[in-house]
Image 1 (cartoon, rainbow, N blue to C red):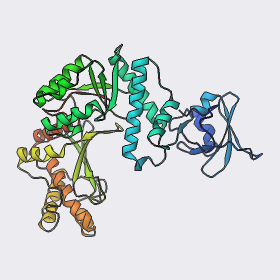
Image 2 (image 1 turned 45 degrees about the vertical axis):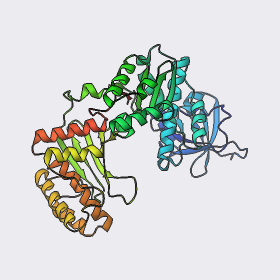
Image 3 (image 1 turned 120 degrees about the horizontal axis):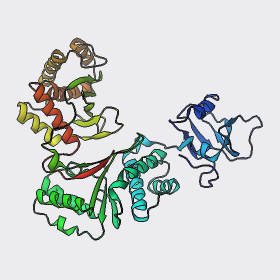
Image 4 (image 1 turned 90 degrees about the vertical axis):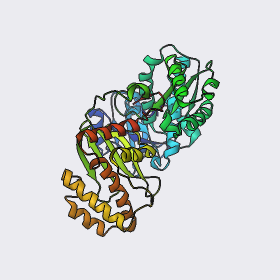
Length: 434
């Protein structure tokens, strides 16, 4: 919600956006003037208001604000403060091009909201969160971040109860900087593959030196588990919440590795893009593996991510350092990535592998009907696409054909599921708000 009525903080030119979720009656009032959900407006405070300015009357109330739409037309909005404020979110600019900064903004807002409630039993105002965001970088705030953090807090409250007296930090910033250095040395894992917590709550009386002195990764993980049980350490992985409520769960690799998963990991479908840029392999539970390229426009390194259909967020990256060795040890198949065999015999091998995937599943794409169509697309593809094709198909083969039977396929999906949730024998306990 954008608190814009009688708020001098948001002056002329401040941008707001019509919320995606509006009541039918409010939505209808905007639609009469052809304003749909997602329409962007700017606050207009100048004196030269045209006499024939159209008026949108919301619910009963005498609050008035003037806005300018994307075509520079001025409108008059009248109604109660709650009906006007509740119709808009603050508008975020250039969000997609600032991924790292946005992550910092989201995590910092959540952390500060947690801190204000846990230490003072107060809800931090959205205006304070706008200030927090602007201190990191102006123009990137979005009301969604505040709404998401409030939902996260509601899921966290029953767990925290009356506990307080913590320090709060993002991963690897202060006390956890040395912690992650120790964990990397002992586990040989990257930060997130050891513990993907975005925010750490550390009781002020807790002695971190005992963790820094760990002799092996088992000792370190066991002490963190004990500290969690005593509510001395709370490592929290955050997911942006777009559903009505957030949920809380504890991810404890030591207990979860040998448990039977209560999700159906049988094959459902696979969708290979006709640009050979990615594919998504979906199981009957909705758990899916997305395979594709990122990091740069020309990379040949394949990335894997776990996700749940319709969840609105990724579970996390599947560890490339362990995926390849796992497939090799289980099925004697070596996945290709990087430059490697990306031309000549590599293309011929990849074609043969794709043909075998079509033979096994018949339908593997929304847009490619059969192997002949795929081969025709490859013939006219760019050199980069051909090289990517070689590596992408290797991963498709590793996930679909290399597993010899249904049991093998389910085992492979279980490996991917655990890896995306950072659950391995030497990974560390964390809690997740999603």
